[in-house]
Length: 456
Image (cartoon, rainbow, N blue to C red; front, side):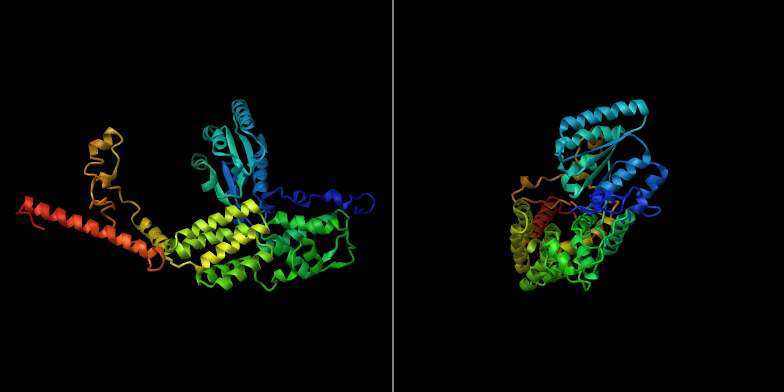
């Protein structure tokens, strides 16, 4: 239905797509990323001083990655171009890099290259940027929803800053919704009011994603409802194809629900774990958000008590990606049952926390010289690699050789529990300790026989 405004004003369809029309063009208008855009923060300083380096923007959909990239490129007033990793090919990349090299020679300024969804490039295609970033021929701005540590070449990300964007909070989405309604009204087009429950439902459904929020609001505007009528919660729920009861407007937001899920799994309560899982799915939660938490649980609360737990979670993600929603949600159910029923241990979690302190406390300890590879003559002259004992040369498949720096006095960093596979891990650790101890005692007796005058 085409909804015309007063004479001289555009019809409402001319304001769509709403998400694109609402895209900020100043860094101060970007919501929810104040840790990057606030006064004195990294992106504000870049704009203020007109200094820009290569950046990977990493974060969930609809948080401002593309917007921030375009604002930064525009603020420098230098040549720039953008293309999408989902459709571009290696030949196009090489052509662009040649243009960048030529432009640098003429203008003495780098070309700003913006690559949307850079994680879709394979490793070989990513390598095509390396030398140009390193020489400063280009400033590369990339966006990704995937963890750069797993999806991007280490050589490339070592030459770039990784800035992580956060999901938008409810008050950010509320402000964006108000701005969208105001923008439509400013164009002389009346819009229907939303009942408080309907507004809350839209924001909850968005799950921190501004684009999803604006697309949902656009669907409402496209209906051409009488602006004198208030749109009720049930109407919005029907539009979103979600059940109203799947949403709790009393404050049970996604972080409370995922926390309840996590604690139920940790408590080995299968029923409660399944309940919270399906509360989230019924409320429109992104299944991948839940799977990410499952993967963390598999290490933090189960660990080596059941090493298979992480594999079950990763398989659930792969299966869900392959099948999609809603059929693929059964794999989340399967993984949830497995995690809740698995033997529990927080030994890895405790070890991680302790090792962060140990690494900081002993951060200047040198590598023992016998563990250093004599890869050049200077190292060899210092005695690198001398007295190194190769474990496979010994029947015991271990040695009494010291492999911790002398300055590190602490030991027994990891203490396995007695449930599940960790019981086997405990036995294995004890096995190796006893073998080393026996070898040390044998070496001591040999030394005493060879040198009876030597004191212990």
